[in-house]
Image 1 (cartoon, rainbow over the protein chains, first blue to last red):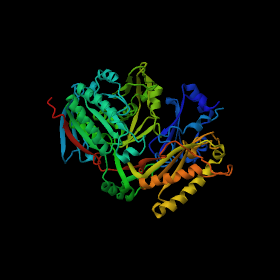
Image 2: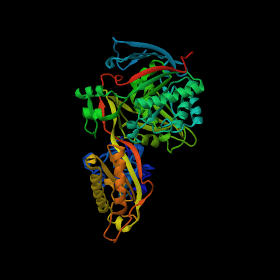
Image 3: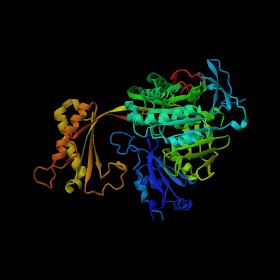
Image 4: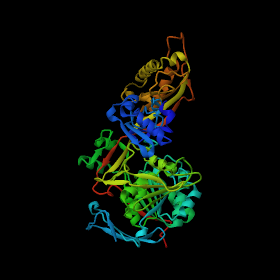
Length: 101
Length: 511
């Protein structure tokens, strides 16, 4: 099964002009725990997906919100010539296909 | 007598103001030393212990977003102490800050502001607006002030108004920089005198203190430039001596309006802060807050879901708990606040240049399968044309030409995990950016012919490779800006970076 089949929402967004943040949210505790216990979501996986140094990846497990969060520096500052996603809203796609064993 | 913020004697100008808030049940006596932060002293008298709470309405996530007037009326019946609303964001990009223009149409801002100001007068409670006009610069604040004047005239209101400007003086900032009182956040672009001088506009994001000063002087309407969203809602709860963790967290969960609800809808948020808890509920059809929706809201647009930095410290939600009171209301407890040295976040924009674009597409599979190398050749040809036609006026370091290739990787750029998957059609936006509009326009003009006709080996003879969307093909976009600061300033006092002007809109209050 892939993450997109289990999560209720996978989203990305600017957290200010210099940071991209990714939220992975679930409908119920069982789904959240399933992903958490699989260990499939971690800074190393994320760094590989987004081709950035693992030291730059911040990772949070937020059980009370039934959510995981990743944050990384933006590859280009928001609005810099060449930045194709002003709000950062379409950067989550690689997370959809993370395999959850 | 309740005292907080530490007690100190102010030896400079200070002011005692007495006024009634809320439903007139609660007498506040506020003393402010406007000049010396270390001596900031706040004293509040309360008539009874059970009144130590603050109730407020967050009518919409952003002024101009479209307030539900009916829901606002329903919430107004719950005896709120104030209405607050944020009007700004950096989310739209650097243009508003750079250009000095708002992101919302004037009509929608006027409609929402009118609903709020009339509700505030009806209930005799203050209305607090922050980050006016999207970016919260002086020109943005004045734009909203002009709208407020119109509303006051149209509805025959009287408003004791405090206008707080947040734009920063460059000489002042350079002095702070030389005193090592401008610090980088992570990640931060480099800063120097020339970065400050080269900025079109720099604003400081104010905390609660300038708002509290304005409220203590009796403002019915506080119109602030760039301001922490949460501070708009935390100012009065903190003035009343409520716990800072709860006051700030209440602001955080309320500031986006109904975004804190399970599903987005058209309504308002009503929040109550007491000594030991926050309660939050929506008014509006089909809306409900759930423990998960409220907990999840702290994730939104924040890099850290637990720690939220404000001017005076960090509120920490690590130990916050969320529980349902009924089907629509959530109780929050356990939010904490850690005091830290006072800092003010800076936001700056500088001119990146002027831009012209061409929009079109390619359908030819022979070109699509070699798009990168073909565009590189087109680019080389353009550079040669530019050098030939414009000569020294347009050195290569002065301009940029970028192809956004929709269908390949325009949306994700170098983060794209699947750049080899070729579509049957590719959309292309050519962005030419240069120091003048004239040069950007000419760059785009010079790009059109090579885009149309640059050959490929698969076809013999003259090709037309690029499907232009428009005639004329070149669209001038005007100036474009970039964010150039991700820093905080360390001021001597929480109010020294902000200028407050008081005025009676619609004439002095008679009651």
